[in-house]
Amino acid sequence: MTSSSASPSPESLPATTDDLVKELRQVRAENRQLKQALASHAAVDQAIGVLTALGRISPDDGFTVLREISQHTNVRLSVVAQYLIEHARGAALPGVLLGELHAALSRHAGPRESR
Image 1 (cartoon, helix red, strand yellow):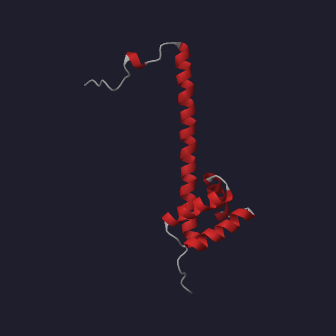
Image 2 (cartoon, rainbow, N blue to C red):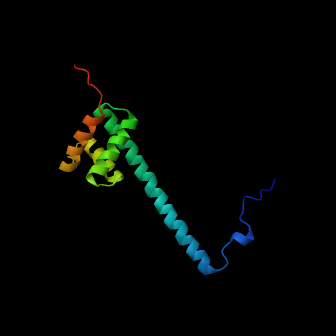
């Protein structure tokens, strides 16, 4: 069984060594970006879990809180996520993030049940 899509056509292959080097650099740069995006996405998902547990809110509200903290403090979303993960492990949050965390959670948290 042969597959015509298994290998590129000769017309689509780079023509020179310089073209090959350029394409290799582009592929490596794209690979680094994809790895960084994957790591960032994992941190954001973990931070949403932290916010869901901490604030007793839905995952959708957790993402909204995370986004609002990022926007209101002008700190990248992935950086805020990393701070929240570290906070869940016992580290202190920077004051500006802590203040915005409390404000955002109070905007999105539903009524709390008394114990």
